[in-house]
Amino acid sequence: MPANAVYLTDGSPRRIKIGNGKGILFKRTVAKNLAFKSDLAMLIVFALKEITKENVTQEHLDRLKYVLKQAPKEEILQDVKLMPAWIKDLIIGLYE
Image (cartoon, rainbow, N blue to C red):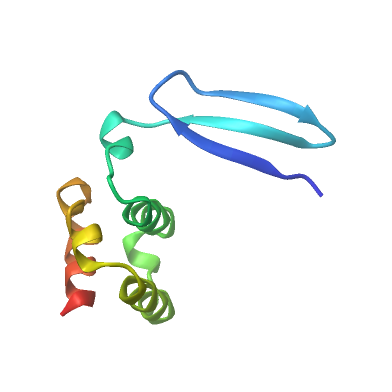
């Protein structure tokens, strides 16, 4: 089964083949996307961007609310200034 690791970088994008269909993909991103202090906040933002605003379901929101309860609120909220407006609104709304 092919498996690829994907890493974000502010360097040049590239793909490194390891063999048997496996590889490492370095995807280009802006430095702002690498500035998160909280790994969880960063993962949440990247996941929601991938899903897109229009495709976020109630199931996604329920799962996200559960995950947010497990992490200190201050840890997530310290990074809201780095989030797109729609994600920031969604996260803050889940805390209310």
